[in-house]
Image 1 (cartoon, one colour):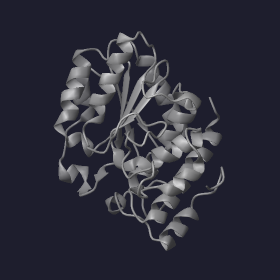
Image 2 (cartoon, rainbow, N blue to C red):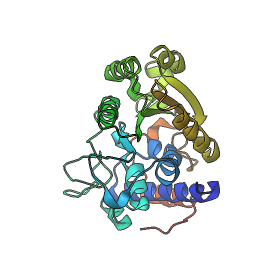
Image 3 (cartoon, rainbow, N blue to C red):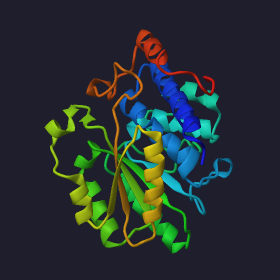
Length: 281
């Protein structure tokens, strides 16, 4: 395991990448991307068993990750580039016509690290379950991870998939919900209030854990606990509490930054709060 300070420095650089990418193309979703930077750092630089140099869509004999909330593609692209899936300099092409880094991840561009298109909310868990079942059929003992949003789970397909995974003991699946409490139209409790998600997933026969997704040490420890619960008859759900826009004070906990690009002046202000650690592209 990398030490916590090193992981934190990576997540800070990823946040810088997110701000610079979105400001440059004047389009994108900074809020959720900033909030989830610690998770992507933890997964790609510590937790997952992956092979960036020999990426295949099938993902045999390595862990797989599926981003269901495809609009936070910038943070995923940064993590993939920083981990060596493709050149860091390519981050400058976000949302440009004909490039591989589209607003939502797509497979047709064959960007290393991306195995399925995402952004049509609610579908990622189904894709992850299918991949997890395929691993079982292939006697592949690696894990499948998926990331969702607490606004996204208003989609009914999520609950059909969750019910299926529990009933069929898809125990090589670790799903994560980004619990930042806000979505594009406001606070989740006001848009479509939901009773305890923990109770819901427990009722659907999942193991459920919770953590602060912006505390690297706690996040790393809880992800390991998730892995400890794998292959024991139940899928695993991590309810990860984060702050939208984490790391940039004027974006934090503000749903207005769900899908709004900062101006160049705002970007400079944001970057002044995020120390360059790995070198900008």
